[in-house]
Image (cartoon, rainbow, N blue to C red; front, side, top):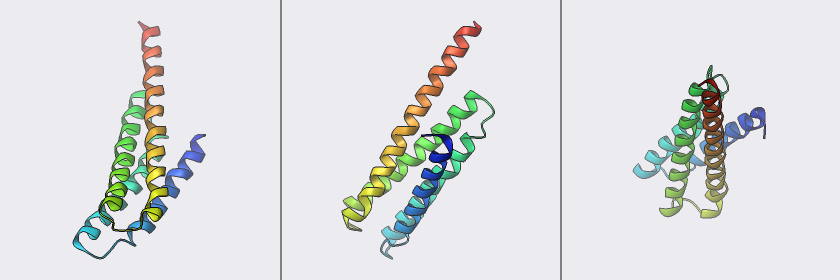
Amino acid sequence: MDAEELKNRTKDFAHRSVKLAVMLPKTVLGSHIRKQLIRCATSVAANYRATLLAQSKAAFISKVSIVIEESDESEFWLEFIIDEKLMQKKRVLPLFNEAHELTSIFITTRKTAQKNKSTINNRKS
């Protein structure tokens, strides 16, 4: 998957998450989760875009680490929605799975970037 495809995938994840979030019950818990899910899911897309503009390997690794945290938090809130039975599991599960996949993709991306950075640093020494 290239950077443009991943950029579109994270943006789609943000859109789908917002649509799901606005359908949460209008309760104290629903409102809290709505805000949290919208914040972290849109942050995945916004921060991934920032990784594409990173000016160094270290900056890239730092920015992709933020993407990992936000996608993992999105996964948490989606799981919480399922656990609390705020929505039907079948409605939330595809988005939960996407959050999990994105987290895995970005963890692998960070590992690769760290490995490549180490290789470059070892060559310089």
